[in-house]
Length: 398
Ligand code: LMR
Image (cartoon, rainbow, N blue to C red):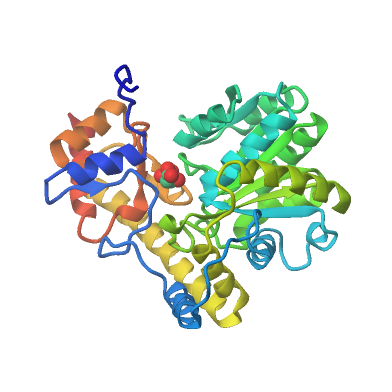
């Protein structure tokens, strides 16, 4: 059966983690995957999560199936976090939410559904985008193309080019937008520019699909929803894939959500029924534990406050590491100005390191980064930042 199977290439991000694990060098550093580690290089188990889990274990709950769309309390908590307490679209019942297997699961469920709904439509991702976006949506059957986004000269978004690209798209094109902490570049557009994106989407009848995997890593969980809420206020229909992997440090629990904003409550019921079919024929219904923990935290004023504090500490530590790396690069005699690292938002820096630089970092130093030059600042700590700065200094200087 399998005699002619060819070896597939490693995943561009998770494949780095595999290679990193096989590396026997003690000084190795994994700056590939977007995972937050504390100053001891450990993935934290948040105190708020610990408290919610303890209560849950003590309650000794049975493990029945969840509804296909996930727990109602979880889905309501997601809507509250994304759209706010008083959101019209929540009150009127025109938004529906599905608990999914991480943000990736939300993208795939949404992609599968949109593909059925608009089989002729093409899907557009930013240039560049998260390495897995193209693969997930191609796997859903879409032809995936890009819209202009990043300008290497300014290290920021090229907004006029982005806007022109969006304005040129045919009706019912699906447009994947990073709602905050653009992955991989860390270059976000401004609120007023988001207003123009909303307008371009509306004018051209586009299908916006917002991806918000790093909510809370730019300015805070509420502030980082600005783009989502502008779409909400516009009255348009759109989709949102969200994730608690990073902001709750629950990576392996696969806790995400797909929210779909429809025209009205009656339409929402019809869309709900169709997306349930997509889910049922894929993984049936989502797992219980992670979503229940997140719900317990978000619905307890005390634990929610604790969560916001723990998230703020993660955000601050990443910022400290951004400054530390820039200082140490300077101290290592690097002439190139790397101060842009302190301006980028979220977990990543799009360093401008070339594939050759990245290869040398891995071969000579055991430091793993994505081939595009993206590094994860959240994997730096007070013990490895010197080593990483010296490695970068070495590869860029000769
Ligand atoms: C990343 O971009 O590194 C994260 O979103 C993890 C992943 O699944 O790729």
